[in-house]
Length: 191
Length: 102
Image 1 (cartoon, rainbow over the protein chains, first blue to last red):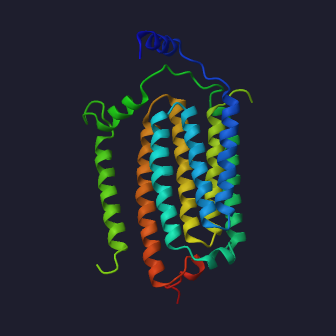
Image 2 (image 1 turned 180 degrees about the vertical axis):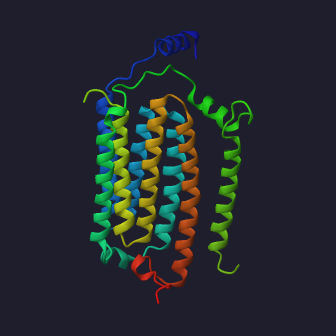
Image 3 (image 1 turned 45 degrees about the vertical axis):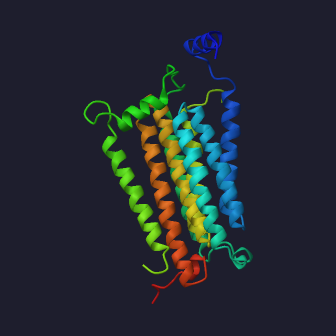
């Protein structure tokens, strides 16, 4: 890390590096997310569904990076793709009975579920079509800022001034404790 | 379509949400139902982060972090329920989990 390298980085940051190829990245990541989402709900093998969900989570993390949210993208990859999906794969291996992948995949009332989901899709399409005028035409270019530090200030800061979510953070840690206790007690054979 | 606006991200989030709802309502395998719930939560997160970008403040991103934490807790508890049910009755089909049926 010689001074010349940091000078180059500083000048690039101060110049406000413009994003390049944004539509291409967006359509590739969005298409990957939606295609993997379709694979999650249609695969016969549960392990295939879990792997498709991991691809979806990584694509959504890429979309977060495009939205100038690097910390949320990091949390998504570490917690969701690295923690929750590994937990899912463990449980799939534990309850893996081959007969479930050879039986019917969709339950008896699947047309009703599909109709309800199509009604929901129609609602979303009408909401987006009606509210299209409310959104500005172009995204504002934000100044380069330290995203992680600002989120840390909001989460851990002093409750009166700038930490608006300190109390919620403590409650979230309590929630995790309760979830851990619940999961351990539920899976014990004898309480 | 050269400019990617907030609306594009909302459309992707809506598509993921509807896919998750289809998965919850139509699949028989309980683990895949739980994974569809995670898909729904991710769609909501994408929505929040897109709006956070639109307004320029970080409230949406902090909310998304809390939703991720909550999804982790819920996945752990849901899978615990699944495992303890699987010990009673060797099935993971939602059609056969009907102990409350009369």
